[in-house]
Length: 456
Picture 1: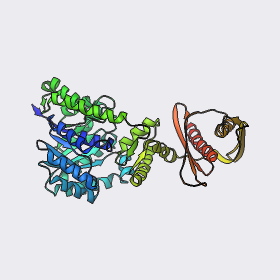
Picture 2: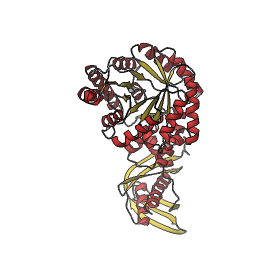
Picture 3: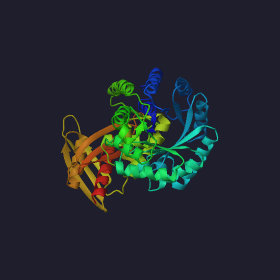
Picture 4: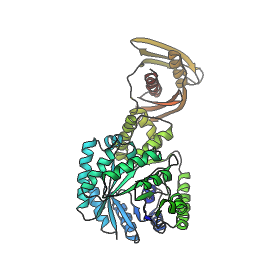
Protein backbone atom coordinates (compact mmCIF):
# COMPACT_ATOMS: atom_id res chain seq x y z
CA UNK A 1 0.00 0.00 0.00
CA UNK A 2 1.27 3.47 -0.89
CA UNK A 3 1.27 5.86 2.07
CA UNK A 4 -0.15 9.22 1.02
CA UNK A 5 1.22 12.55 2.19
CA UNK A 6 -1.62 14.92 3.18
CA UNK A 7 -0.94 18.61 3.78
CA UNK A 8 -3.65 21.00 4.97
CA UNK A 9 -3.87 24.61 3.74
CA UNK A 10 -6.96 25.60 5.78
CA UNK A 11 -5.06 28.01 7.99
CA UNK A 12 -3.73 29.84 4.97
CA UNK A 13 -7.07 29.97 3.15
CA UNK A 14 -8.99 31.02 6.23
CA UNK A 15 -6.45 33.63 7.29
CA UNK A 16 -6.38 35.23 3.84
CA UNK A 17 -10.16 35.37 3.43
CA UNK A 18 -11.20 36.28 6.96
CA UNK A 19 -8.01 37.93 8.16
CA UNK A 20 -9.72 40.65 10.13
CA UNK A 21 -12.33 38.30 11.59
CA UNK A 22 -10.25 35.37 12.85
CA UNK A 23 -8.74 36.07 16.25
CA UNK A 24 -5.37 34.89 17.53
CA UNK A 25 -7.13 32.38 19.83
CA UNK A 26 -9.25 31.07 16.94
CA UNK A 27 -6.18 30.54 14.75
CA UNK A 28 -4.54 28.46 17.48
CA UNK A 29 -7.75 26.47 17.96
CA UNK A 30 -8.01 25.80 14.20
CA UNK A 31 -4.38 24.73 14.08
CA UNK A 32 -4.79 22.36 17.05
CA UNK A 33 -7.96 20.82 15.55
CA UNK A 34 -6.27 20.24 12.17
CA UNK A 35 -3.25 18.55 13.74
CA UNK A 36 -5.58 16.09 15.50
CA UNK A 37 -7.06 14.98 12.15
CA UNK A 38 -3.84 13.15 11.28
CA UNK A 39 -2.49 15.39 8.50
CA UNK A 40 1.22 15.21 7.76
CA UNK A 41 1.72 18.97 7.40
CA UNK A 42 0.12 22.32 8.08
CA UNK A 43 0.77 25.21 5.70
CA UNK A 44 1.00 28.79 6.90
CA UNK A 45 0.04 31.97 5.05
CA UNK A 46 2.80 34.07 3.54
CA UNK A 47 4.39 35.84 6.48
CA UNK A 48 3.89 39.57 6.79
CA UNK A 49 6.61 41.73 8.28
CA UNK A 50 4.48 43.07 11.15
CA UNK A 51 5.48 42.34 14.74
CA UNK A 52 1.91 41.29 15.56
CA UNK A 53 1.84 38.60 12.87
CA UNK A 54 5.33 37.47 13.88
CA UNK A 55 4.06 36.72 17.39
CA UNK A 56 0.98 34.90 16.03
CA UNK A 57 2.95 32.71 13.60
CA UNK A 58 5.70 31.93 16.10
CA UNK A 59 3.13 30.76 18.63
CA UNK A 60 1.37 28.59 16.02
CA UNK A 61 4.64 27.07 14.83
CA UNK A 62 5.77 26.24 18.36
CA UNK A 63 2.41 24.60 19.13
CA UNK A 64 2.73 22.10 16.25
CA UNK A 65 4.58 19.02 17.47
CA UNK A 66 3.31 16.01 15.54
CA UNK A 67 3.52 17.15 11.91
CA UNK A 68 5.46 19.40 9.56
CA UNK A 69 5.02 23.14 9.29
CA UNK A 70 5.36 24.51 5.75
CA UNK A 71 6.42 28.15 5.54
CA UNK A 72 6.35 30.23 2.32
CA UNK A 73 9.54 32.24 1.73
CA UNK A 74 7.77 34.91 -0.34
CA UNK A 75 9.28 36.90 -3.18
CA UNK A 76 11.53 39.44 -1.46
CA UNK A 77 14.68 39.31 0.66
CA UNK A 78 12.70 40.60 3.65
CA UNK A 79 10.01 37.91 3.42
CA UNK A 80 12.70 35.24 2.90
CA UNK A 81 14.51 36.31 6.07
CA UNK A 82 11.24 36.37 8.04
CA UNK A 83 10.38 32.84 6.86
CA UNK A 84 13.76 31.34 7.73
CA UNK A 85 13.68 32.98 11.17
CA UNK A 86 10.25 31.46 11.76
CA UNK A 87 11.47 28.04 10.62
CA UNK A 88 13.93 27.98 13.53
CA UNK A 89 10.95 27.76 15.91
CA UNK A 90 9.52 24.63 14.25
CA UNK A 91 10.29 21.03 15.15
CA UNK A 92 10.01 20.00 11.48
CA UNK A 93 9.96 22.87 8.98
CA UNK A 94 9.80 22.89 5.18
CA UNK A 95 10.34 26.07 3.17
CA UNK A 96 7.96 26.71 0.29
CA UNK A 97 8.79 28.53 -2.92
CA UNK A 98 5.34 29.47 -4.22
CA UNK A 99 5.35 30.89 -7.77
CA UNK A 100 2.73 31.43 -10.51
CA UNK A 101 3.15 29.49 -13.74
CA UNK A 102 0.38 30.92 -15.95
CA UNK A 103 1.32 33.75 -18.29
CA UNK A 104 -1.36 36.14 -17.07
CA UNK A 105 -0.44 35.84 -13.38
CA UNK A 106 3.32 35.97 -14.02
CA UNK A 107 3.05 39.15 -16.04
CA UNK A 108 0.42 41.00 -14.02
CA UNK A 109 1.50 39.93 -10.53
CA UNK A 110 5.28 39.93 -10.87
CA UNK A 111 5.78 41.63 -14.26
CA UNK A 112 7.93 38.70 -15.41
CA UNK A 113 7.85 36.67 -18.59
CA UNK A 114 8.58 32.94 -18.64
CA UNK A 115 12.43 33.04 -18.96
CA UNK A 116 12.74 35.57 -16.10
CA UNK A 117 10.34 33.54 -13.94
CA UNK A 118 12.53 30.46 -14.42
CA UNK A 119 15.52 32.53 -13.28
CA UNK A 120 13.57 33.71 -10.24
CA UNK A 121 12.52 30.16 -9.34
CA UNK A 122 16.13 29.02 -9.64
CA UNK A 123 17.57 31.80 -7.47
CA UNK A 124 14.98 31.60 -4.67
CA UNK A 125 14.95 27.79 -4.58
CA UNK A 126 18.75 27.65 -4.43
CA UNK A 127 18.80 30.24 -1.65
CA UNK A 128 16.16 28.25 0.30
CA UNK A 129 17.99 24.93 -0.13
CA UNK A 130 21.22 26.48 1.16
CA UNK A 131 19.53 27.05 4.54
CA UNK A 132 19.53 23.30 5.15
CA UNK A 133 15.74 22.97 5.28
CA UNK A 134 13.76 20.79 2.86
CA UNK A 135 12.28 22.85 0.02
CA UNK A 136 8.95 22.48 -1.78
CA UNK A 137 8.19 24.26 -5.05
CA UNK A 138 4.48 25.09 -5.48
CA UNK A 139 3.35 25.79 -9.06
CA UNK A 140 0.22 27.91 -8.68
CA UNK A 141 -2.34 28.35 -11.47
CA UNK A 142 -0.61 25.45 -13.23
CA UNK A 143 -3.63 24.38 -15.28
CA UNK A 144 -3.62 27.71 -17.14
CA UNK A 145 0.11 27.64 -17.91
CA UNK A 146 1.55 27.27 -21.40
CA UNK A 147 2.09 23.64 -22.41
CA UNK A 148 5.31 22.26 -20.99
CA UNK A 149 6.08 25.27 -18.79
CA UNK A 150 5.01 23.74 -15.45
CA UNK A 151 7.35 20.80 -16.07
CA UNK A 152 10.10 23.28 -16.94
CA UNK A 153 9.53 25.15 -13.68
CA UNK A 154 9.53 21.91 -11.68
CA UNK A 155 12.76 20.76 -13.30
CA UNK A 156 14.41 24.12 -12.60
CA UNK A 157 13.33 23.96 -8.95
CA UNK A 158 14.64 20.41 -8.47
CA UNK A 159 17.95 21.28 -10.14
CA UNK A 160 18.34 24.03 -7.54
CA UNK A 161 17.53 21.98 -4.46
CA UNK A 162 13.77 21.40 -4.24
CA UNK A 163 12.81 17.85 -3.29
CA UNK A 164 9.02 18.26 -3.52
CA UNK A 165 6.73 19.73 -6.17
CA UNK A 166 3.04 20.68 -5.92
CA UNK A 167 0.88 21.14 -9.01
CA UNK A 168 -2.14 23.42 -8.38
CA UNK A 169 -5.43 23.87 -10.20
CA UNK A 170 -6.32 27.24 -8.65
CA UNK A 171 -8.64 28.14 -11.51
CA UNK A 172 -10.68 24.95 -11.09
CA UNK A 173 -10.95 24.41 -14.83
CA UNK A 174 -9.50 20.93 -15.38
CA UNK A 175 -11.19 17.65 -16.13
CA UNK A 176 -9.55 14.62 -14.47
CA UNK A 177 -7.98 13.44 -17.75
CA UNK A 178 -6.48 16.91 -18.40
CA UNK A 179 -5.12 17.24 -14.88
CA UNK A 180 -3.61 13.76 -14.83
CA UNK A 181 -1.80 14.47 -18.11
CA UNK A 182 -0.24 17.59 -16.58
CA UNK A 183 0.77 15.78 -13.39
CA UNK A 184 2.25 12.89 -15.38
CA UNK A 185 4.29 15.34 -17.45
CA UNK A 186 5.71 16.89 -14.28
CA UNK A 187 6.49 13.49 -12.72
CA UNK A 188 8.40 12.45 -15.84
CA UNK A 189 10.34 15.72 -15.77
CA UNK A 190 11.40 15.31 -12.12
CA UNK A 191 11.54 11.56 -11.37
CA UNK A 192 13.59 12.07 -8.18
CA UNK A 193 11.11 14.48 -6.55
CA UNK A 194 7.92 13.84 -4.64
CA UNK A 195 4.95 15.30 -6.52
CA UNK A 196 1.77 16.46 -4.77
CA UNK A 197 -1.45 17.97 -6.10
CA UNK A 198 -3.76 20.76 -4.95
CA UNK A 199 -7.10 20.35 -6.72
CA UNK A 200 -10.09 22.69 -6.86
CA UNK A 201 -13.73 21.82 -6.22
CA UNK A 202 -15.19 24.75 -8.16
CA UNK A 203 -16.78 22.30 -10.60
CA UNK A 204 -17.07 19.48 -8.03
CA UNK A 205 -14.15 17.46 -9.44
CA UNK A 206 -11.51 17.92 -6.72
CA UNK A 207 -11.58 14.31 -5.50
CA UNK A 208 -11.80 12.90 -9.04
CA UNK A 209 -8.78 14.94 -10.16
CA UNK A 210 -6.86 13.92 -7.03
CA UNK A 211 -7.65 10.23 -7.56
CA UNK A 212 -6.46 10.13 -11.14
CA UNK A 213 -3.37 12.15 -10.24
CA UNK A 214 -2.53 9.55 -7.59
CA UNK A 215 -3.04 6.79 -10.16
CA UNK A 216 -0.36 8.29 -12.44
CA UNK A 217 2.19 8.67 -9.64
CA UNK A 218 1.40 11.65 -7.43
CA UNK A 219 2.37 10.93 -3.83
CA UNK A 220 0.23 13.34 -1.88
CA UNK A 221 -2.58 15.88 -1.81
CA UNK A 222 -3.44 19.27 -0.32
CA UNK A 223 -6.76 19.74 1.48
CA UNK A 224 -8.63 22.82 2.72
CA UNK A 225 -11.68 23.05 4.96
CA UNK A 226 -12.32 26.62 3.81
CA UNK A 227 -12.22 27.93 0.25
CA UNK A 228 -12.41 26.11 -3.08
CA UNK A 229 -9.83 23.40 -2.41
CA UNK A 230 -10.48 19.71 -1.83
CA UNK A 231 -12.24 19.24 1.51
CA UNK A 232 -10.49 16.89 3.93
CA UNK A 233 -13.72 15.14 4.96
CA UNK A 234 -14.56 14.23 1.35
CA UNK A 235 -11.05 12.97 0.68
CA UNK A 236 -10.94 10.99 3.94
CA UNK A 237 -14.27 9.31 3.08
CA UNK A 238 -12.92 8.51 -0.38
CA UNK A 239 -9.78 6.85 1.00
CA UNK A 240 -11.78 4.95 3.62
CA UNK A 241 -14.14 3.61 0.93
CA UNK A 242 -11.81 3.06 -2.03
CA UNK A 243 -8.32 3.18 -0.54
CA UNK A 244 -7.77 -0.58 -0.75
CA UNK A 245 -8.86 -0.65 -4.39
CA UNK A 246 -6.55 2.26 -5.16
CA UNK A 247 -3.67 0.75 -3.23
CA UNK A 248 -3.27 3.80 -0.96
CA UNK A 249 -3.67 4.66 2.70
CA UNK A 250 -3.24 7.70 4.92
CA UNK A 251 -3.02 8.76 8.57
CA UNK A 252 -6.29 10.66 8.40
CA UNK A 253 -8.79 10.18 11.24
CA UNK A 254 -12.24 10.36 9.64
CA UNK A 255 -14.11 11.03 12.89
CA UNK A 256 -11.76 13.85 13.92
CA UNK A 257 -11.90 15.32 10.42
CA UNK A 258 -15.70 15.46 10.31
CA UNK A 259 -15.81 17.12 13.73
CA UNK A 260 -13.14 19.64 12.71
CA UNK A 261 -14.75 20.46 9.36
CA UNK A 262 -18.12 21.02 11.03
CA UNK A 263 -16.63 23.36 13.64
CA UNK A 264 -14.54 25.41 11.19
CA UNK A 265 -17.29 25.63 8.58
CA UNK A 266 -19.85 26.81 11.14
CA UNK A 267 -17.44 29.47 12.34
CA UNK A 268 -16.69 30.62 8.81
CA UNK A 269 -20.34 30.87 7.82
CA UNK A 270 -21.09 32.83 10.97
CA UNK A 271 -18.36 35.35 10.16
CA UNK A 272 -19.38 35.57 6.50
CA UNK A 273 -23.05 36.06 7.34
CA UNK A 274 -22.14 38.99 9.57
CA UNK A 275 -20.60 40.83 6.67
CA UNK A 276 -22.54 43.36 4.66
CA UNK A 277 -22.09 45.38 1.50
CA UNK A 278 -19.20 47.10 3.29
CA UNK A 279 -17.13 43.92 2.89
CA UNK A 280 -13.50 44.65 2.22
CA UNK A 281 -10.97 42.84 0.05
CA UNK A 282 -7.59 42.50 1.73
CA UNK A 283 -4.38 43.44 -0.08
CA UNK A 284 -3.26 39.79 0.24
CA UNK A 285 -6.02 38.59 -2.16
CA UNK A 286 -4.58 36.46 -4.95
CA UNK A 287 -5.17 36.80 -8.68
CA UNK A 288 -7.65 33.90 -8.52
CA UNK A 289 -9.47 35.55 -5.57
CA UNK A 290 -9.90 38.77 -7.56
CA UNK A 291 -11.19 36.90 -10.64
CA UNK A 292 -13.81 35.26 -8.41
CA UNK A 293 -14.78 38.65 -6.99
CA UNK A 294 -15.04 40.06 -10.53
CA UNK A 295 -17.28 37.17 -11.57
CA UNK A 296 -19.40 37.65 -8.45
CA UNK A 297 -19.97 41.25 -9.56
CA UNK A 298 -21.29 39.85 -12.84
CA UNK A 299 -18.39 40.52 -15.22
CA UNK A 300 -16.88 38.06 -17.69
CA UNK A 301 -13.52 39.57 -18.63
CA UNK A 302 -10.66 38.40 -20.82
CA UNK A 303 -7.39 37.22 -19.22
CA UNK A 304 -5.81 40.52 -20.27
CA UNK A 305 -8.53 42.61 -18.62
CA UNK A 306 -8.48 40.40 -15.50
CA UNK A 307 -4.76 41.07 -15.33
CA UNK A 308 -5.24 44.83 -15.66
CA UNK A 309 -7.86 44.85 -12.91
CA UNK A 310 -5.63 42.78 -10.61
CA UNK A 311 -2.64 45.04 -11.25
CA UNK A 312 -4.69 48.14 -10.39
CA UNK A 313 -6.17 46.36 -7.34
CA UNK A 314 -2.65 45.64 -6.06
CA UNK A 315 -1.59 49.26 -6.63
CA UNK A 316 -4.62 50.65 -4.77
CA UNK A 317 -4.69 48.07 -1.96
CA UNK A 318 -0.97 48.37 -1.24
CA UNK A 319 -1.58 52.03 -0.49
CA UNK A 320 -4.81 51.54 1.47
CA UNK A 321 -4.32 48.05 2.96
CA UNK A 322 -7.72 46.88 1.70
CA UNK A 323 -10.52 48.08 -0.57
CA UNK A 324 -14.29 47.88 -0.43
CA UNK A 325 -16.04 45.50 -2.81
CA UNK A 326 -17.71 48.45 -4.53
CA UNK A 327 -14.28 49.96 -5.18
CA UNK A 328 -13.44 46.86 -7.21
CA UNK A 329 -16.45 47.70 -9.39
CA UNK A 330 -14.95 51.12 -10.05
CA UNK A 331 -11.55 49.57 -10.83
CA UNK A 332 -13.19 47.29 -13.41
CA UNK A 333 -14.93 50.29 -14.97
CA UNK A 334 -11.76 52.35 -15.22
CA UNK A 335 -9.25 49.69 -16.30
CA UNK A 336 -11.01 46.79 -18.08
CA UNK A 337 -11.88 46.80 -21.77
CA UNK A 338 -10.63 50.30 -22.51
CA UNK A 339 -11.61 50.81 -26.16
CA UNK A 340 -11.46 53.53 -28.82
CA UNK A 341 -14.36 55.96 -28.37
CA UNK A 342 -17.13 55.71 -30.96
CA UNK A 343 -19.20 58.40 -29.25
CA UNK A 344 -17.71 61.59 -27.79
CA UNK A 345 -19.57 63.95 -25.46
CA UNK A 346 -19.73 67.45 -26.97
CA UNK A 347 -22.09 69.25 -24.59
CA UNK A 348 -25.24 68.92 -22.53
CA UNK A 349 -27.91 71.20 -21.09
CA UNK A 350 -30.14 70.05 -18.25
CA UNK A 351 -33.15 71.85 -16.75
CA UNK A 352 -34.51 70.65 -13.44
CA UNK A 353 -36.38 71.88 -10.41
CA UNK A 354 -39.03 70.94 -7.87
CA UNK A 355 -41.85 72.54 -9.88
CA UNK A 356 -40.87 71.50 -13.43
CA UNK A 357 -40.28 68.24 -15.26
CA UNK A 358 -36.59 67.59 -15.78
CA UNK A 359 -35.42 67.86 -19.40
CA UNK A 360 -32.05 67.29 -21.01
CA UNK A 361 -30.38 68.03 -24.32
CA UNK A 362 -27.25 66.01 -25.04
CA UNK A 363 -24.94 66.36 -28.04
CA UNK A 364 -22.64 63.47 -28.96
CA UNK A 365 -20.20 63.22 -31.85
CA UNK A 366 -19.74 60.09 -33.96
CA UNK A 367 -17.41 59.92 -36.98
CA UNK A 368 -17.30 63.73 -37.13
CA UNK A 369 -21.10 64.07 -37.11
CA UNK A 370 -22.87 65.80 -34.23
CA UNK A 371 -25.97 64.01 -32.96
CA UNK A 372 -28.49 65.69 -30.64
CA UNK A 373 -30.99 64.05 -28.31
CA UNK A 374 -33.66 65.85 -26.27
CA UNK A 375 -35.81 64.15 -23.68
CA UNK A 376 -37.69 64.54 -20.41
CA UNK A 377 -37.24 62.24 -17.46
CA UNK A 378 -37.82 61.50 -13.81
CA UNK A 379 -34.99 63.74 -12.65
CA UNK A 380 -32.00 65.27 -14.48
CA UNK A 381 -29.93 62.07 -14.73
CA UNK A 382 -32.87 60.04 -16.06
CA UNK A 383 -33.60 62.78 -18.62
CA UNK A 384 -29.96 62.81 -19.76
CA UNK A 385 -29.88 59.02 -20.18
CA UNK A 386 -33.12 59.11 -22.20
CA UNK A 387 -31.60 61.79 -24.44
CA UNK A 388 -28.59 59.54 -25.12
CA UNK A 389 -30.90 56.61 -25.88
CA UNK A 390 -32.78 58.82 -28.32
CA UNK A 391 -29.49 59.44 -30.17
CA UNK A 392 -28.44 55.79 -30.36
CA UNK A 393 -31.96 54.47 -30.93
CA UNK A 394 -31.64 51.76 -28.30
CA UNK A 395 -32.48 51.22 -24.62
CA UNK A 396 -29.99 49.34 -22.43
CA UNK A 397 -31.01 48.00 -19.05
CA UNK A 398 -29.35 49.90 -16.21
CA UNK A 399 -27.94 47.35 -13.75
CA UNK A 400 -26.32 49.75 -11.28
CA UNK A 401 -25.72 53.45 -10.85
CA UNK A 402 -23.39 54.99 -8.24
CA UNK A 403 -22.11 58.47 -7.45
CA UNK A 404 -19.44 59.37 -4.94
CA UNK A 405 -17.26 62.35 -4.10
CA UNK A 406 -13.54 61.90 -4.73
CA UNK A 407 -12.33 65.28 -3.46
CA UNK A 408 -13.48 67.60 -0.68
CA UNK A 409 -15.08 71.04 -0.57
CA UNK A 410 -17.58 72.92 -2.70
CA UNK A 411 -15.52 72.28 -5.82
CA UNK A 412 -15.41 68.53 -5.14
CA UNK A 413 -15.18 66.22 -8.13
CA UNK A 414 -17.73 63.44 -8.44
CA UNK A 415 -17.09 59.95 -9.77
CA UNK A 416 -19.98 58.06 -11.33
CA UNK A 417 -20.17 54.32 -12.05
CA UNK A 418 -22.71 53.00 -14.57
CA UNK A 419 -23.36 49.32 -15.30
CA UNK A 420 -25.35 48.51 -18.46
CA UNK A 421 -26.59 45.12 -19.63
CA UNK A 422 -26.32 44.32 -23.35
CA UNK A 423 -26.89 40.86 -24.85
CA UNK A 424 -26.79 39.33 -21.38
CA UNK A 425 -23.37 40.77 -20.60
CA UNK A 426 -22.36 43.47 -18.13
CA UNK A 427 -20.50 46.61 -19.23
CA UNK A 428 -19.32 49.27 -16.79
CA UNK A 429 -18.38 52.87 -17.41
CA UNK A 430 -16.71 55.45 -15.22
CA UNK A 431 -17.00 59.25 -15.44
CA UNK A 432 -15.44 62.04 -13.40
CA UNK A 433 -16.51 65.70 -13.31
CA UNK A 434 -17.05 68.57 -10.87
CA UNK A 435 -20.63 68.44 -12.17
CA UNK A 436 -22.54 65.38 -10.92
CA UNK A 437 -24.75 65.25 -14.02
CA UNK A 438 -21.67 65.50 -16.24
CA UNK A 439 -19.99 62.63 -14.39
CA UNK A 440 -23.08 60.45 -14.94
CA UNK A 441 -23.29 61.28 -18.66
CA UNK A 442 -19.57 60.56 -19.15
CA UNK A 443 -19.92 57.22 -17.33
CA UNK A 444 -22.87 56.23 -19.52
CA UNK A 445 -20.99 57.15 -22.72
CA UNK A 446 -17.93 55.23 -21.48
CA UNK A 447 -20.01 52.07 -20.98
CA UNK A 448 -21.82 52.66 -24.30
CA UNK A 449 -18.52 52.81 -26.21
CA UNK A 450 -17.54 49.41 -24.80
CA UNK A 451 -20.84 47.89 -25.95
CA UNK A 452 -20.55 49.39 -29.45
CA UNK A 453 -16.92 48.29 -29.80
CA UNK A 454 -17.68 44.68 -28.90
CA UNK A 455 -20.82 44.54 -31.05
CA UNK A 456 -18.83 45.70 -34.05
